[in-house]
Image 1: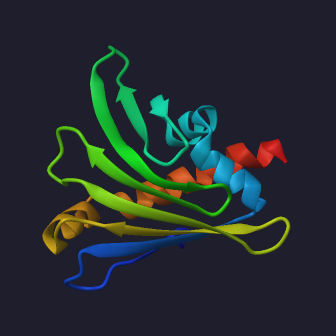
Image 2: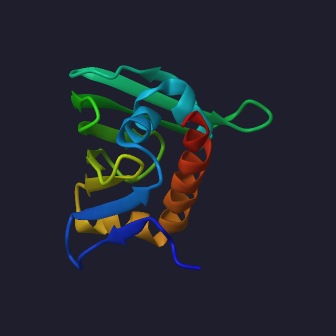
Length: 155
């Protein structure tokens, strides 16, 4: 089955590009990345902080059934332009990937469809390639599928 979320990673580069079209109006797609309650639902993680503003910060955490933290990530929001763009850093705690720069651009296709263009920059090509060896493509595609399913109920 073909993945709807497309990842373009050029050999030797420090970055990758992710695109996905959604059967969602632009405003709802943006809301899925900006409202903590929605982020929690489609990402399956607890949002400890999400300040949708320039110089804001964010922090996510996932625990197992026993309450042990299995994933924790945080960053700073550098640009937050409603329905247009979010620029932020992304750092996973206790992971070897270092800080990433994420540029998320939101695009209206029609009144009922929209697209996200993500440009992610890693500290090195080696770190980027290490991330791509994980089931990264399948994971982000599954998350985007959940996003569309959950947010489409808000139409």
